[in-house]
Length: 364
Image 1 (cartoon, rainbow, N blue to C red):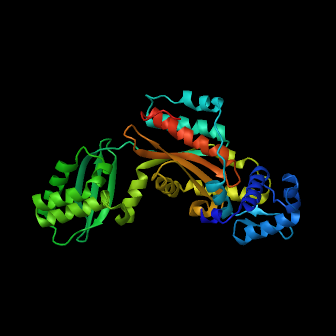
Image 2 (tube, rainbow, N blue to C red):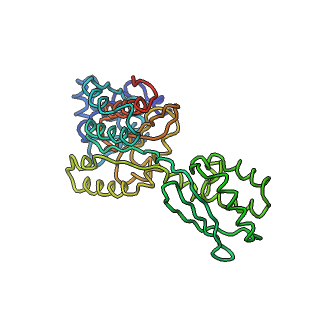
Image 3 (cartoon, rainbow, N blue to C red):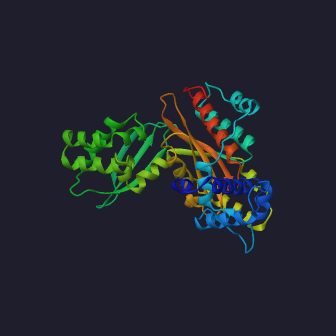
């Protein structure tokens, strides 16, 4: 926001006018056009000089020689963060969202209805990350497959089976394997992976006290593979991937991304965006990062590697459960040139409505 403080009133006025014109028309704005829009209160020469200053600051650029100016992504970010006047939803829009969400509905029903409503109102593609229902563990077993490797088998309450190969700690004996299997099944049966992740270090410490050292090393190896470590930043990549796979992604309204395509370059960007959306694991990872903190978050263009080539913006907000914990994120994928003043309150209100349906609070 330091750049905004460097702009005097005249410069802010010109910058705001250029960005607002771009968001409305998509066209570069020239000094003569802008002078007319400002009722000639400033001369074209003054406006040109100010445009050059803004371009030097990295807030504007000229798409062609002798063309007008357009905002850069940095300029759009400055405008959205410091100069945008967010609009208000009307009663009809609020009504279109609220009746479709039932307070006693299942989480998946609530969020699916929410993104469908948001899609219709925003004319964008909408998405939501939903935590999967936590399946509890029914059985865990370590099976030797070689001198260096063990097969770890986990069966959940629905009899789904997952297998992992892990390195075998030195000195493991058949008796150690039996002790490990018995210990883990006694301690972890009936608990979910997310619960295990939250208590990994406690379980390792307990194992070191209750069983022999060889078996304790096996317990630690198994928990590191399935549950990760208490410190998210220190988790191995596989554990972080598991946390992502604990969530599902729902996308609605992809066809809206094809609206208003005027040039072949636009179509190519949409194709790239469709490819990005197929990488659901990466998208869930991006959205999960937006769960930290309150309010609406906006990612513009190359601010995310995922959308760096498609020129898209992501406008999202977290929703909460009855314990006021953010458990997921919903929002819209929109072109970089979008009506942010309208989309931000739509996303914010939808997140609040979902939170209300999940037993939290009344949306404002």
